[in-house]
Length: 164
Image 1 (cartoon, rainbow, N blue to C red):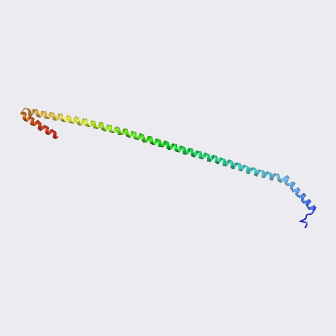
Image 2: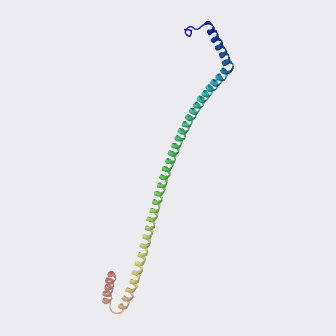
Image 3: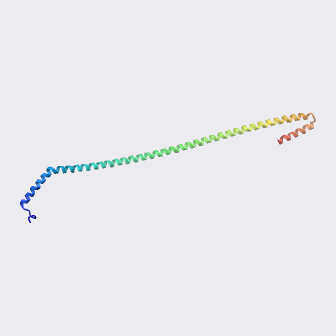
């Protein structure tokens, strides 16, 4: 029962041993333990601050990426708009050029037709003149003979030249 009810001397010796232990711990152990706890607390705070900075940096990067993405989309839209405008310009220029070339071709064909028509008319005139000279020559040869024959011969020549 002495353990359940400690004696007065045991309580004093235990208090004295506890006090010495407390003094030794306070002198040598508390400062390093508190310093290590303080250091641990500081490292945890630093880690939390670094994590917060990293989170903010990630948000900034995300915003920057979204901004770059938006700018890229706007630039893409602008490039597409410019490409459509250039396509329309090229198509309009091609249409205008085709119209001008068509008009030039039609004008050239008209001029060629007129030229060929004039050449044909000139050839017909030359042929008629040649026939007229031939007829006049033949009429003059026949004129010396008989008037009736001359008229019949002229009509015959006219009929022959119409057939040709």
